[in-house]
Picture 1 (cartoon, rainbow, N blue to C red):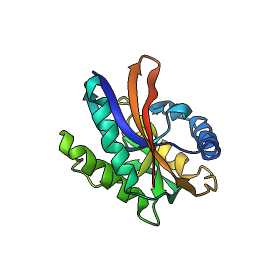
Picture 2 (picture 1 turned 120 degrees about the vertical axis):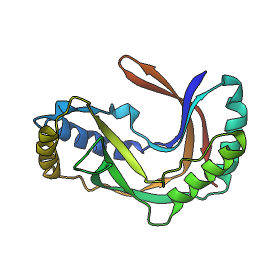
Picture 3 (picture 1 turned 180 degrees about the vertical axis):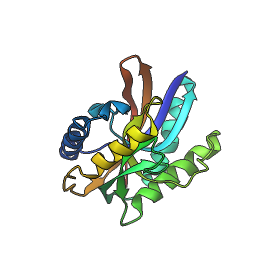
Picture 4 (picture 1 turned 90 degrees about the vertical axis):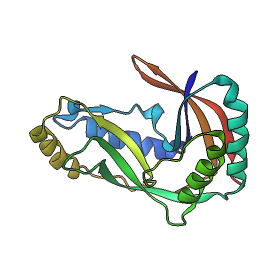
Length: 191
């Protein structure tokens, strides 16, 4: 069994801008309340598949290839810092993603539709495109989070440039003591 998901990666230049933002956030007092995502692990998740048998990789890859063929490349842009479920009860800090053409929602829908006949249930929550930056540690107190939230709101945001999404990736996630390690099982170009 392997753990897998479907995602979009950031282009290198945009990844560097996000790394710089992460460094600024990690320098804040109380930033130890957050388990920050390692820069090499940044991605935009389209579908989490969970644990799958290795012998299913070819059929999943074929379905993802078909889903990619139904969508054209599209533009999106990282925008503001956000928190799930909200800033008051933050569990995840993220960057919001603007999807002006609807291409991101289209490809996410196509991926979910392609995987559904294979037994993967679509997420019941509405798709909210985001780039996870960190997860709040369980030991964080409400007062500490309020203070960190105030500091985060004052961080200078980079002027993120839009980027064109041209492919999706089928990714294996190995959970290691040092954090997750990702390896691609397949990449599929949008037509």
